[in-house]
View (tube, rainbow, N blue to C red):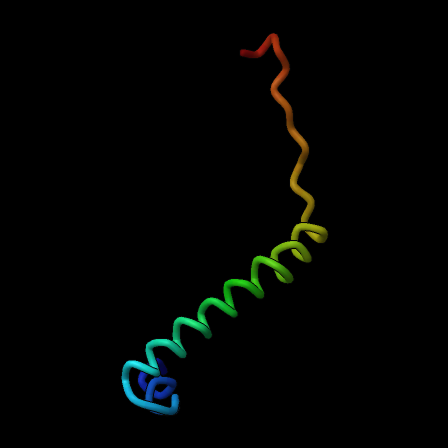
Length: 55
């Protein structure tokens, strides 16, 4: 799969490396800015606190 993606990216090797870095950065940005906040709204973590007497 990675070989197929690498072969279909245009340009020389140094340019392909830059393209891969940009693509990965865009994917990570999309996850942190859109998907993870959306999932946080769907799956609410339990609000827990530690009371002073439990320390």
